[in-house]
Amino acid sequence: MRVLGIDPGSRITGYGIVDQVGNRLVHVDNGAVFTDAHRDFAVRLQRIYRGLSEVIEQYRPDAMAVENIFFATNVQSALKLGQARGAAIVAGVNAGLPVFEYTALQVKQAVVGHGRAAKDQVQKMLKVLLALPEVAQEDASDALAVAVCHIHSAKLNAVRRPAK
Image (cartoon, rainbow, N blue to C red; front, side, top):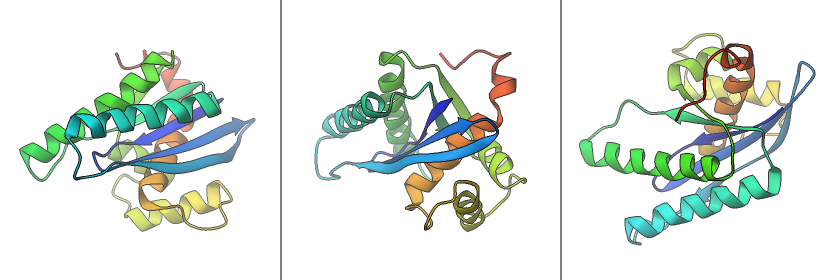
């Protein structure tokens, strides 16, 4: 199973691709889609959609897992983040992928073993789990964690439906 993990953001949307081979996790790629903060917001959303569509076309994942954000510092930030998540989700759905959503608590629990883990703990654990040569860039690391969370949750997901 190949999973595309997404850490959505209106300026930087991280992605991480992880394969499950037997009971091993294999790092395929990670990176980010960067948008220009000085451009119209609609153009930035288009950049996220197109960038992720290219990643999907190149790597052909079996599923997409997206971090579900429920906290933001202000209303405007929350709205923009929600729209960036929407652009990412539409890229997956348009490619025919099942899309799953996980909270930060679920992601940290799946990767580190407890939901209150610090960001650097998650990054260090990913380095070990995926045999990375170095800690991935922050947004890409978060996306890899979401992919790993989905793989660890796959049996549970078989009995529940993907997000609509």
